[in-house]
Length: 112
Length: 196
Image (tube, rainbow over all chains, first blue to last red; front, side, top):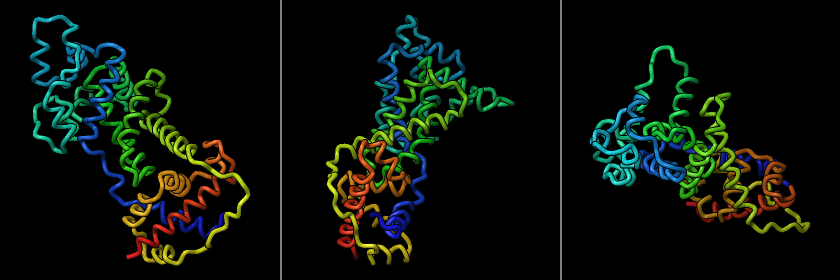
């Protein structure tokens, strides 16, 4: 049978955890989770186009802006452009990566 | 997170802001999705870490599973509860699912054996009196078999009762009790081997 003293000891021993446990997640983890979730979203069809994103009031980064103003169809504005951006690669691999431009989600993770 | 900045600031309720965010994520808006990931990660990371420490290798996989599950179930989010509570509910379910699968895989002996164990192990008690040594606790847990580590964390850190553990793993309470007795014994042995 379980001894109450044993129970008490193990509860005390295991219930305490270091304070750092409550820290926020590393930005590189957020970056990898974001990329994974967007890949999952793409499996059920294209992402919202950049025009829709702008219409909803969100900012887009300088590279996305170039795509948005290009004379191409809506479909060409839907891929996950971050997939080929070095900001994603850096942000997934490093904390505090050297990426700074506005409206980049990977920069926002670093600052969150 | 900067993406939130476009929402009107004055007088808008948190519920409305969440509803707008959820709606944008469902439209597969990439910026809203980034904001969603950032918010949810802040909520679930401490929750998952607390329940898995020191097995950090599983934290990222589990967080990914939780976020993808949240995304797939987002059409069912009706805003009755706050988004945070809803996401943490999914996280709790996923963590329990993880414990359950791992512990179910363990061979639990059901024969009637005497599961009595030493009442007090002086070295553990000494350490408790001197204040918890987190590093040593985590080191000891790391060296246990995964099933023993998870069983101890589930019981003593997540405060699951024997009955709940038995129901969730499909085992008898006695079998769970014996698993815990073996886990504690293994912990004590490792703890004493690790004595400075």
